[in-house]
Image (cartoon, rainbow, N blue to C red):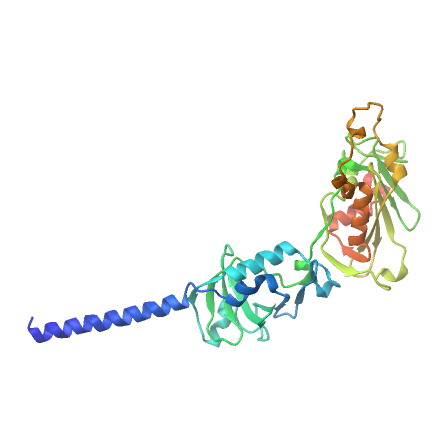
Length: 357
């Protein structure tokens, strides 16, 4: 190799190395940066956000002084856990790599504008102190750890590290927990139908294994052992599917409801009114405390050293059955709830449903 050829080869290597370094610098600037630094800096000051999909579903999450609410559901309480998970995921999201900037290929990643025909992504509009920030969230990885996104107004799409869980329907964002009463604590359940039929089950004490069906015909038997227990377990971990405000006209135009009353050994009373409508049944709840009922099951207090005679800490005053009833009633009063079918079925049982045919 002569000197001239050697010099040309050295120059070529230097030029190629320069391009490689420059290319690597461009890649480094595109990757491993925060997707939404505005959110990262202001996550505690966010006022709310809106979730919209291509089918016209809109969910508006608003941050109030004490809680988050879902505007499309009469400002019912939102699922703060789901909100927190998604906001933290977005605030921490980092760009893995840049993807297509060709609008014709957006649909493949799910990042087309939601106004486009067949759009499958979700538009997220965040209300931040510095102004709104909007992105399209497209397809996610199999395990949900990564997602394709595109900032509104920018051509390039991105693959980001963000375990997002964005529901497109307002019901997806509701705090669905209603009531949680252990079956052991239920004394009696009474269902009264509009035609006058009454179905009642009860047990003698907390330790009883089963609920007895009242007024059961002498020659009849239960359909199967434990069938009454399903009625007594309705309030255990009870959640709802959807909710609407209880306003005139929403109670099946004045139709008589099925009324199911749960009475607990501690005096807590939960009354469910089930209204049947053309599309689906809805349930209104009323919660109260019956001191007379509670007194029936107070353990004897003859022993001066018994736990019943022990001083009650001041902090326990807010955890009494009466206080719990007041808290539940404040939260549930004024709403109609759509319950899962299997729970609704137990609220509307007739005696024939419980007996062996």
